[in-house]
Length: 136
Image (cartoon, rainbow, N blue to C red; front, side):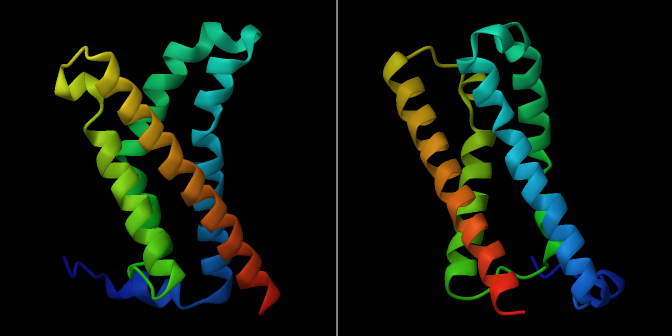
């Protein structure tokens, strides 16, 4: 959309800003996995519904976290990471609460795709962090 703020762009050129905003983005992605823990660990299941609401709201604002870290989508694996990140966010926007469909097949397909993309994003994020600190 070419929405650029000069002051933010200048901040994003600073090494310390990149690292701190990257940490915030990485913590956000890691926090989103707490929903999975509340669903699979028996003693946390009572928190699953409230965590699901938090997960959805934070996921809805995830493009803002990304934008604060980087205005550009990058090149090579960073472009792929960006596309997968935003595809997963878009998929999250069209969850079954929005579609209003009770199909078990649709739910399973949606969930498998969402979790698979989340795993790929997480792996690529760890790879990105490794490359950033290995080459600096």
